[in-house]
Length: 391
Image (cartoon, rainbow, N blue to C red; front, side, top):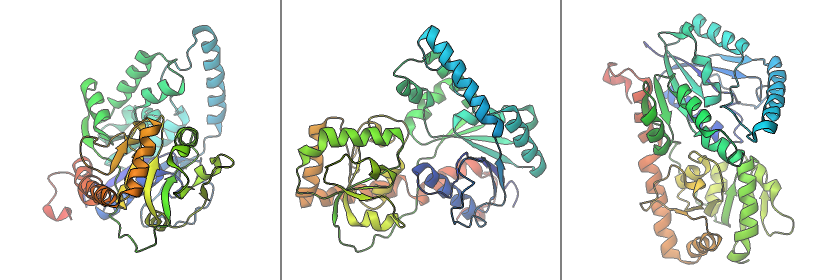
């Protein structure tokens, strides 16, 4: 097949399925396999040194892992420089972090020129400068824009950033690409207003439609998450502000790395490790995503919807979800209302059934492979290809 060689830059081990973003990229690899693409991965040594037990030979052809020994020193010096500037200005960030090095760019260029790729795809704006290289002319450059990084840095620094400088640099980097994939309409609208060159395409989080198993729903409430700071802060808020308002008649489980952050003395089930997420979601009735910060669509919300689970979440947790339709997602930042949604779902059978049906229907219409694959085709498939390319 012509025009089928793609190089994907992704800094994490895709086959380590302990985070939602890795799950997104695993599904992207499955899309490429279904469409018949020849895919290579360019990554960095973070995470690839441990054996995940997964055979990735059916999903990728070659794996290039950049050994970044000099990167640690560069980052250390950059942090010292930033702290010195902060003393004089009171700001934490002066521009968008650039996590590339000259050595990394040279290695990336070497891999691209040797393999003659038709397309390269970059994840994360912090590595966008990998493609700011005259040696990559004639190759379609694709950016997966899953977050609004300026907003993330604004939250992380408590508002102490030079917003204009950071946003200008983020726009400049987005403008380096030919095509940009966005997971939410908000990011697409924002950057399309300021960027001159890229085509923008909707590519929300997606996954297979699941066949739910007939299992006993012995978990009333389920929270799944890694130990990233947004999840930890949200879980703390839930237990401090919401937990006691629910009452003790409902069972609650916290699964994944986040289970290690359940406050002492709180009546919650810890499920640190689980082999099959399907069985875990099949046991639950309601999923929660109590996030106070963060941007971008949340994988765990979409994952819960795929099992027909109603989701109670917050404003940040519902990013990318259309809040003006019946979709099984209930969003509020008010602790009392948050608790009220949970109690109504678990005590009103009719309301629960309607919400569950809406959740599953919303997933199938927006986030299933069948729907999103068509969007991805507009990014990666030459429209002049014969019809048999589409399945």
